[in-house]
Length: 268
Image (cartoon, rainbow, N blue to C red; front, side):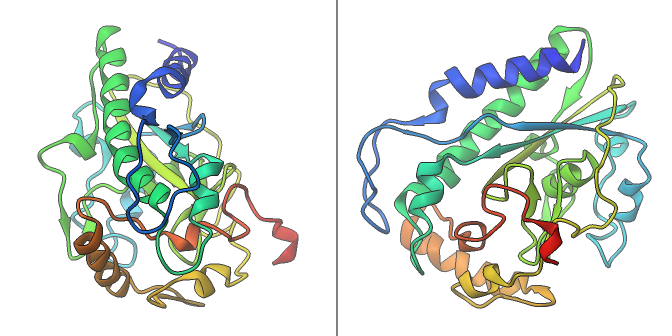
């Protein structure tokens, strides 16, 4: 099965599936720009990582993620490739969240309903692969998936890095060709696909260190050295109390140069 078949199916799902549309928004944190139905995602970016790429082993370092992070082969015996994708939020969601401090209603829906869509998309890819005689699994849907001390045993962002989709920012968001505002997903498969060539060598190569995300962060969890994950977690926990089951923030991903593109590296 060619990667083009997978891309076509994914694009069709994004364009036509009802889960990518929020039919009605109830005002949560701020008045939405419109009560009209809202599309969550634009067409995605898709990249391929080889299951034997040497980068997977580096993620087991305590300085990166940690020894609990599992390689593709540990998730799926016989793994050959990892399909990674980035789902960029629509302009409507991004524009709404450019407001200061409070998280926009549109973003809260995009984060919660958007992840429900993401889960469904993972299943679509798995079904497509298995329907063509292969085996596939998504760590995020697996019972073994776990987060311990703010570190997961599978990182969608790190998988995207291996798959050539982007690099990290000061806020630890991923900067892709379509920016940082969106969601990532991945599926591991047991047949070889041509890996996407990475156009970078450094983990933060696309970040221009402009400090815009530092100024945008409500709990001041970001500085020139990176992000304080615990301070961010505490702030998000408060949002969960206010907007349960939804939460969002991600001010660091909007009204910044990397919101929907790779910043001009010549500014570094």
